[in-house]
Length: 290
Ligand code: RIB
Image 1 (cartoon, rainbow, N blue to C red):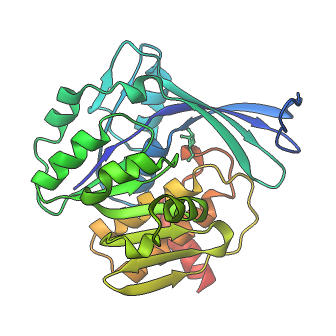
Image 2: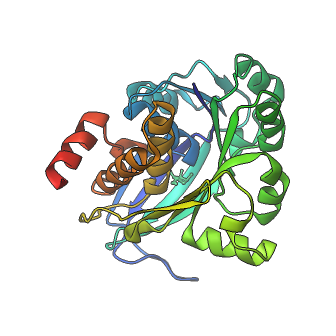
Image 3: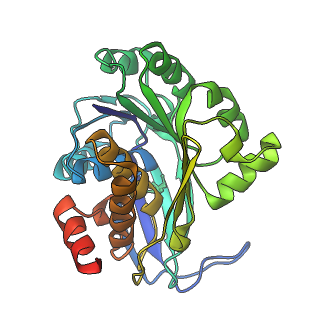
C-alpha cells in the first residue's frame, strides 16, 4: 500500500512570454486554475499508474473544488481533513520555454492535525511506502510512525530545506531531489548525497534524465525527448509513478523507464495534476519509442 502525507493546492497559472524579474510588472497571456501541490500531484501519478493511494492531507472551507478534482483523478478524499485554515494555493508563472516560477501559500497543508494523520496510518504495515514532501507539517512525526512500523519513508526534499532533511535523515529510505537540491544538500552536509547512507537516492535532472543510487549500484535513465509546454509537476509525476511501479512489483529499471515516460508525457500538456498521463498512454508511448 502507498500512503502520501501530501500538500493539496489550487494552482493559479499565468502564462507569460518570460518569467518576471525583480521589480517588473508583466501582463499574462492567459490564466487557468488547476489542481496542484507536490503531494497531490504525486498521488494523482500513483493512481494514474494503476496503484491505490491513501492521500492524507487537509483543505479549508474553500476546498470543495480541489476535492472534486482529486476525485476526478481517482484519488480518494476520505483521508483529507476539513479544517479552518484556507486551502493551500500556488501562484505559478510559466514562460514560453515551459519553465516556471512558483510561490506557494501553505494554509491548511501546514495545519494537518496529528491525530488525523496518525489514525489514517493506523493500518500501516511493514514494507508499505509513505511519501512526504516539504509542503506539509507533521513530517517528523509521521517519519517516526513509519520507522516504528518498518515501512519505507520516501521524501521529496522540495521546497529544499537543509534543516528538514537533517531532522528526517535517519528515517529516509528513498530521497528524491533535483540536481539543484542535490547540490544544496552537498553544501549543507559537506558530503555527496550518494554517500549519505540513503537506501535509495533519486536525482532528477530535468531534460537530462535521472540517476538512481541503490544498493551500491548506479542506474541512469535518459529523459525521453518531447516538446515541453509546461514543466510544472514533472518531478512529482516522476516520483509518484516510480514509487507506484516499484510498489506494484516492477524491477527498478522498469519502474524508472516507466516514470521517465510518464514525466515526458506530462510536460507536453498544461497544468500539474491535469497533465499526468494514465498508464495506458504511458505504455503506448513506450511502445512507440522502443
Ligand atoms: O511541483 C509542482 C507543484 O509545486 C505545483 O503544483 C504547486 O502547487 C507547488 O506545490
